[in-house]
Amino acid sequence: MTTPGEDNAESRLTFGRYVLDLRRGSLMLDGREVALHPKTFNVLRFLVEHPDRLVSTEELLAAVWPDLVVTGDALVQSIDELQRALGESGARLIATVPGRGYRFETTEAPPDRRKARGLHALRFRWKYGILAPLVLGLTVIALWLVPKFRDKTDSGAQASAKPAIAVLPFQNQGDDPAREHLADGITQDIIDSLATSSTFTVMSWNSVAPYKGAAARPGEIARVLAVRYQVQGSVRYSGDDMHVSAQIVDELGRVLWSARFDETPAGKAELPERIAHDIAAALEERVLEYEGR
Image 1 (tube, rainbow, N blue to C red):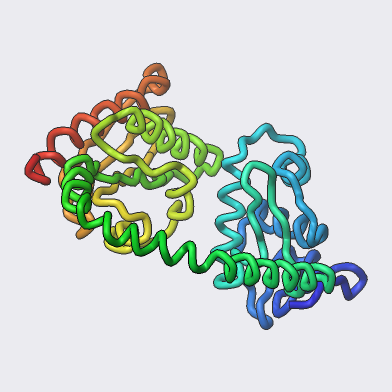
Image 2 (cartoon, rainbow, N blue to C red; image 1 turned 180 degrees about the vertical axis):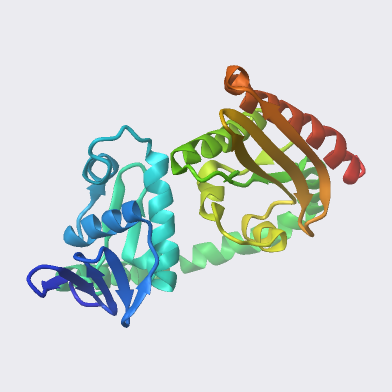
């Protein structure tokens, strides 16, 4: 990848095989357009315009959503979309710095950084070459001790293992994009409610957010997230009335439980809590029964 540059009267930003066409508002790869939401395009543009430096979450939110009050989840979703759109290069080009922000990486590290890496590797080899005999001795002792505790540890781990569950982003089936955040809010409320259970392990919102709007099979999700069960759902509106459908499926896509919730505007505030309560109860009854507990 080359260092991001501008051409054609500052209307294009290039990096490697990618071109950001600022006039059209599109990302191009080898002449083909890569679909991006407008806000996601603006996030990428800001990062590319500020390469090789840490851009804080607050700075990105102010640049892309200047007149709106949004949470960091909106930015997380845009970053996830970017990394998927950029394919294998996504995670390398857009580095996440936990708790601080993001950085657009160019391919080649500066010479001084490469030199520093070489010195670090030299120190590493010297240090661990000296320590190798000690490490070997400790390894022999560990191999002698581990079999004495393996059976007990394995049986205890199996007894304490809790079913892992992913609450996938609920789909907004309406035509109003302004209500998209309501479906996300229901998903997060259910995750927060189930997270208090001592019976299950629940995946975080950041873990399931990449599956928002994605056509992934239950088996693939189960493999990637290492979960046994998934909660799927959708939100639909009839005027101001809300209709929510939810179901629990296993890794083969078999439906273990399903329900529909209809609510008027007056009861919308309590609806996520009620859905979470019913799903938790269904998980306690159906899933544990399914596992033979």
